[in-house]
Image 1 (cartoon, rainbow, N blue to C red):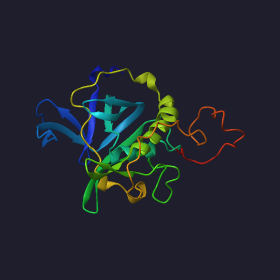
Image 2: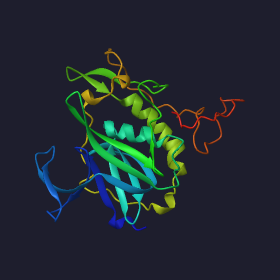
Image 3: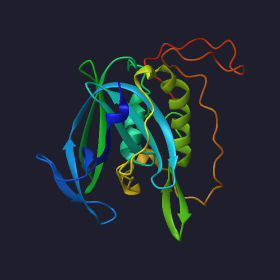
Amino acid sequence: MNESNAIFLGTFDGFFEQKLKEPKPGSVQRVNKNNETINVFRFNTLVGKIVKIEYKKTEKFGDFWSVTIVDDRTYKLDLSVTSSSTFYFLNRLINAEVDLKAPVELKVFAEVENDKKKTVILLKQAGKMITGVYSKDNPQDLPPMEQVMFKGKLEWDSTKRDIFLRGIIEKYIAPELDSTLAASTTAVDDAPAADLMNPEELPEWAKEPAQSPAPAPTPAPAPTAKTFHNPPAPAPTVKDEPKKAAPKRRG
């Protein structure tokens, strides 16, 4: 599949969006965070095989996940690392019920909670809705959000949680994808679309009480004693541990 004609997508206000250079039949206009009027195609469902997922760091757009999805076309879905919609998507992608070699259906919508609107990405496969591994009632070892002082204000920081999920994705998910269908592409100026997380949108279980600012965390290796599809051999420090039969990948 030639990705030179890949369709670059972002999320905004409960939609997948493809940015256009000029108006086209069926497109809509909106004002972006730079107060510029842009033209976009909007839709709610994306179906195809996820063939590549990679973490990218850029000065212009910050850190984001680039997800390559192949169907009759090649799509590049860019998701801001700090977006709540990205967390909900990754939390479902690591579920062991997902066949990483088979097509999936991504559904996006806007959810209003406590008068706050947030974008949610759901994952569906073979007619079944995939649930998240981490939940309010069972956060397990997922690092909670932290409140830190930033420019004189308390802000929610997801750094530890993002590092934790990145370790799982890069060690257990990315290697299992059918990357032979994903050729490299160059970034484009309109990616990724802005959908940064509003800290007030976070579920209570993902937060922890306010505390003094902590030093920047050092990335730690991904967990080695969890259940994933065809996981690598356990690290040397995990000995004689029986294989779990849980139906979920766990961080």
